Structure formats: structure tokens, C-alpha cells
Image: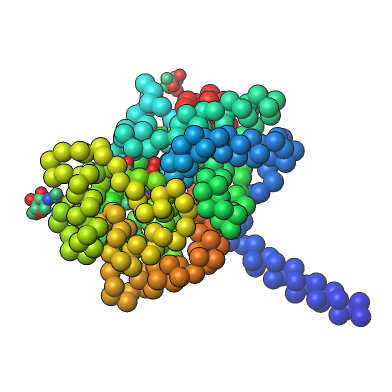
Length: 325
Ligand code: HEM
Ligand SMILES: *[C@@H]1O[C@H](CO)[C@@H](O)[C@H](O)[C@H]1NC(C)=O
Ligand SMILES: *[C@@H]1O[C@H](CO)[C@@H](O)[C@H](O)[C@H]1NC(C)=O
């Protein structure tokens, strides 16, 4: 009996060790990092996000995008939040971000609340972005879109505009360019398809989809015609259109739209061309399986959130998310 249970344990321990290897070599993030240091941290973030979304639903989309743009530039290190200084020009004026990313006021609000309630500077700006993104998805999508965020990231003390211009994918990228961009960040085809569905919420400017609605053939003609009204050839650059038809609801309508050639951005429609590719099949699957989308989206968000976090004594915990201590 004893011998048998020992060998059972050896097998279990060995199995656990094998399962643990990949997580140990990537990041030492964990779900309960603030349990002792500031048990109110996560509820505070959620309540500020909830209030902001009640004021303006779109801010949830903006917060989700902020986490994505943070992670894709030198990892999830809060670098996107840094204002320019004498020592560096930050990410905010990079092409994909300029007059486009938003939500900084909400992050400031969250940070101020945390600094006063937590009795000290304990919650990193990078973690705030990860939690605010999850909360936004959950508030706009409902409980099935919830997932546990891994925490313990620290904040960068520098960044550069060039890193943002080099690493963020533009909307005119073709499928191979999108895939290789995601692969360069350690993400795969499934992550590309799932995370692109972040476009189930939020808006895009005319400049980002004009070429598609006037010049592309892989687009529903009525859909293109209706968009042209708000996005003339030579005018209305900053006019906005919804990224899918249920822009304040996190759902699978984004995928259903791709099946009908109603993706707003060129990069969106690149994921479904009707040619039976692996990407096509994933879009089709998630369009018809909302539960799979909910579960798999959370898994891809965690994977994105694990990109090159600063841990241990690297970086710092910023007092003010806009500047280094
Ligand atoms: C796959 C490559 C991607 C490209 C080329 C891309 C491109 C864009 C563009 C051009 C916009 C409109 C910006 C503007 O007009 O100001 C946008 C908006 C947005 N993106 Fe992406 N994106 C990509 C992936 C993602 C990912 C991975 C997420 C999150 C998981 C995401 C979340 C969003 C959200 C939520 C918005 C709306 C933001 C708002 O309304 O404030 N995107 N994206
Ligand atoms: C720029 O870097 C120098 C040297 O590290 C530092 O002393 C100074 O405070 C920095 N300036 C700003 C605005 O961060
Ligand atoms: C459509 O394509 C033509 C030819 O390449 C180009 O001159 C024109 O600027 C494009 N229109 C838009 C709105 O991108």
C-alpha cells in the first residue's frame, strides 16, 4: 500500500513538474499578488472601470486596447502610459497611438484611488492595465467573458517611440504580415484570431478603413456604401465608425460580420477570405461557438499578458503612471 501510494505521488509530482516547466520559464506572475499588500486593489480597479463605462461605454474598448498596445511594445510594462521626457520620446505619439489611444484619465483615477487606499505604492501600472482590460471585457460581455488575471508585473523606466512604431501592427497589414507580427510576440494563429476579436467593441477612424471601403473587393457592397457616407474620399478623416455592429457589447458579432465580408478594417477581413484556410475555419468556429470564444479569448489574453513582464527587482512600481519615480 505505502509503496504504491509513494509511486503514485512520484508520478503526480513528475507530471506537475512537467506541466510547470513552461510557466516557470516565461513569467513569475500569479493571481494573488495583492492579497496581502492590498486586498482591495482588484475591487477598486473594477469599480473605477465600471463608473467610467457607465459614463461612456467606449472607454471599455479603449482600456482593452491600451493593454494590447502596452504588451506589444517591450512587453506588458506600463510603458504606453509614460509621457515624453527630456530623455525619451515615448509611445503616445507613435503612428498607431497618436490621436487614437485613450483611457489615460481612467488609469490616473485608478492609480490615485489605489495609492490612497492601499497605504503605499504597491500596485503597478502594468497590472492596472491588465485588470482594467479584463474588467472592461467582463462588464461589456457578461460573466462568461471573465478570466483570472495574472499579476506581479513591474513598470518600465524608459521606452521609445520607435519601439511602438516597429511593433504595433497597422490596419493595412495582410494576413502573412499579421501572423508574423503576432509570432514575433510569441503568439500564434489562434491568438491572432481570438485577440483580433477585441474589435467586437470600440470605434475606428475613417483614415484606418478608407482604402478598404473605396478600393477593396472582399467587402459587402451595401456595407461599403453605408460607410462611405461618414467617410468621404477627401474629408472626415476623424469621423468614427463602429468596429462591429454591436460596438458596446463584447460578443461574437465581430466573427459573424467577417463571414459576411463586413469586417471594418482590412486587417479584420484578412482573417476570413472564404478560401477554407485555417484562419477561416477558426473564424467560422468562434462565430458559431460563443462559449468556446469566451474561454479561449481569456486564455489568449493571459498569454498576451505574460509577454516579457518585469519582475523581481527589475523596473519599478510607478507612483504616477505617466512618469518614472
Ligand atoms: C491584429 C492586429 C490589429 C490591428 C491592425 C488593429 C488596428 C486597430 C485600429 C486601426 C483601430 C482604430 C484606431 C483609431 O481609429 O483610432 C483599432 C481599434 C481597437 N483595437 Fe485594434 N488592432 C489589432 C489588434 C487588436 C487587439 C489584439 C486588440 C485587443 C485584444 C485590439 C483592440 C482594439 C479595440 C478595443 C479598439 C477600439 C478602441 C476604442 O474605441 O477606443 N486590437 N485597432
Ligand atoms: C534624464 O536622465 C537623467 C540621467 O539618468 C536623470 O538624472 C534625469 O532626472 C532624467 N530626466 C527626466 C526628465 O526624467
Ligand atoms: C484607391 O486606389 C487608387 C489606385 O491605387 C489610389 O490612387 C487611391 O488613392 C485609392 N483610394 C483610396 C481611398 O485609398
